Image (cartoon, rainbow, N blue to C red):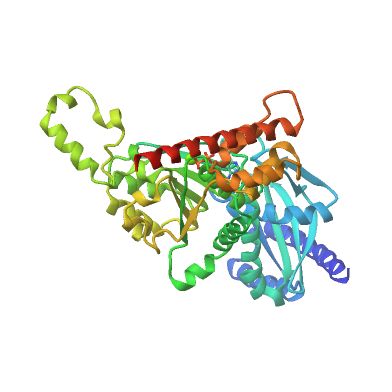
Amino acid sequence: MYAKKNTEMFAQIGSIIASLMFIWAIFQQYFPYQLRNLIDKYSQRLVTFIYPYIQITFHEFTGERLMRSEAYSSIENYLSSKASTQAKRLKGDIAKNNQSLILSMDDKEEICDEFNGMKLWWASGKKASNSNSISLHQNIDEKRYYKLTFHKHNRDVILGKYLSHVLKEGKAIQVKNRQRKLYTNSGSHWSHVVFEHPSTFETLAMDLEKKEMIIDDLITFSKAGEFYARIGRAWKRGYLLYGPPGTGKSTMIGAMANLLSYDLYDLELTAVKDNTALRKLLIEISSKSIIVIEDIDCSLDLTGQRRKKKEEEEKDPRQTQGENVEEKDGKNSQVTLSGLLNFIDGLWSACGGERLIVFTTNYVEKLDPALVRKGRMDKHIELSYCGFEAFKLLAKNYLNIESHYLFGTICELLKEIKITPADVAEHLMPKTSSKDAQVYLKSLIQALELAKEEAKVKSEEDAKIV
Ligand SMILES: Nc1ncnc2c1ncn2[C@@H]1O[C@H](COP(=O)(O)OP(=O)(O)O)[C@@H](O)[C@H]1O
Ligand SMILES: [Mg+2]
């Protein structure tokens, strides 16, 4: 309170000094040059002597740039939580993802902040600009700014630690509120749509322990920027998700992006002409993103088939006449394994930072050992058939039940029969107007029993052949 009064008093002194400066400006042309300089110098000293506070102004638009200053946006975000508790007049706006409200203090409000026991004040303001530039924005002639006031004793800490703390926090809030994007490449260009996949780790049915481990791993990674810098490694991590189709590999990638608030880059390798094009795409990827290469075994011909195909073409050149083979079978990308490896852990992989690279495959054994060697892909995650734990989560999500007398039967059947979570989900999907869980569970049991029967017949046939 005392400090607050102090600032008010000094603010008044400040305005008196400002008035004096104004009078001074009018009269200065009548003073001789030498004297003017002298008075200038001493008045500055007087101001710093009696006014122990330092002020820093952050303008919304600086210089000639039409872009909003990054510092200003970060400060706005940083102050939003404090503004909602302290300021009397607030401004509200919807964040770009249309889900959360951003509050900021209105013009000419002041709020107080504390850092390591030091007090400081943020004030918002605007002033009319005298620029003559033509602008599309009707309010551009009102220049907004934030002014930070703090005691000169705290200068070093505020200018160093505090301001970087503010910028970092503000940026983090901005990232959380931003609209995320799903990019895909057509040739060597990225195009994007808004990323709105609803999947989360809560709705992902899998072994709970494994799930916890993955979440932990992801969060640790996202916070480890300083660690990676210290040990001199690029801030990136590779995941290989493998398992039969329908076990939730793509769903998990969506959940990862939602958990970390990262953008997704769905890289279609077959559409990339060659290694140079791949590098070009890579350079354009921003940080805080997940690069996904789905079905890596299909997208990159690593099994030598490409060579075979070429031989065939040479034998029968008519096949290629008049048509673009590349588009026809989509497998003629010239991206090589070494190009891809360079992309994963070569020099190029370090640009951007804070990136996950996720490969998915249905057949991990088909992949080139060079690609799956430890150290290339940091984590191998197997997504497999639906166990009882995963089933219970699906039943909870789809039918809103935690237990049922049929669960015992299903538990026993799941131990014997391999069924993917996608297939289980299919049976639990509402198809009739009936809300009775029993209907859906029975349909699942029927399917499981049928599969069991088929498996039995097949094993009997196999036995006969042998
Ligand atoms: N583990 C799972 N948990 C919840 N839903 C799943 C799971 N696995 C599959 N599904 C459902 O099945 C559909 C297909 O899954 P997907 O993630 O595309 O499998 P994959 O990429 O492994 O082939 C998804 O839309 C999802 O709703
Ligand atoms: Mg998939």
